[in-house]
Length: 277
Image (cartoon, rainbow, N blue to C red; front, side):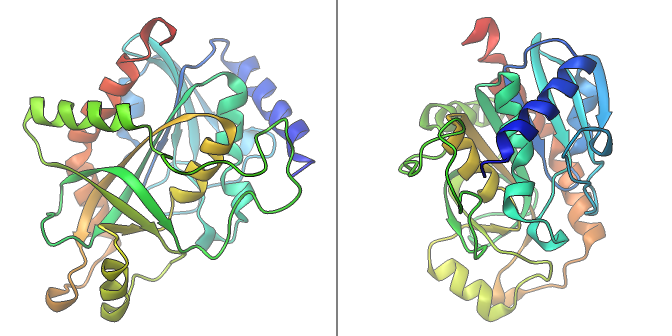
């Protein structure tokens, strides 16, 4: 980890040379959820492969670019696509952009994902605000020598997702009258979807949804001192006794259909940062 600081500084300096404002919010968009970048004003788009030390995104539904601009008048940086462990990247590389977002000046990270629903009360197309998570990725991005310039050796994880932001997101959903739950996200490596027995196990240990991302980025965000809002879009139901075949095409279609609701929650969170709040 000791070599990361200079790489983070170099990547942040390059982005700042392309886009001068200091961002208040970093936003990570999951599979099929890239449309919010179109809502930005005065935007600058930077492909990942042009940013020093950024990895390419190879997953379906991930554009692989950084979009910088104004949302509700607030400077934001939007990651249209992320990297995953199943692509072969180490967790420190996957979470590198979170470090850069912090270095650029952001105080809030909004992280989103497309996921499978384990809770039988949920439905495809619903949203879930993440209250807590379970890490089954068989790894942690903080393993190794700790650099105190980036964060503490033993970051507290009693509330990785900021409680006030959770409450505000649920209130936005109630006001706009769409289904939005509060629950637990479990991260697995993938890339295969789970077996019926695995779905039963994941539900049994307390998970409401399952996905292949998010947790490493949130661990690093907490380590870096960022506030965090996590939002899952349920793109398929993973009920072992009524399991249907899931396809990438259907998952991405469900994500796109739910995107207006997701945009409402993200916009409300960004709006709360006006005036440097």
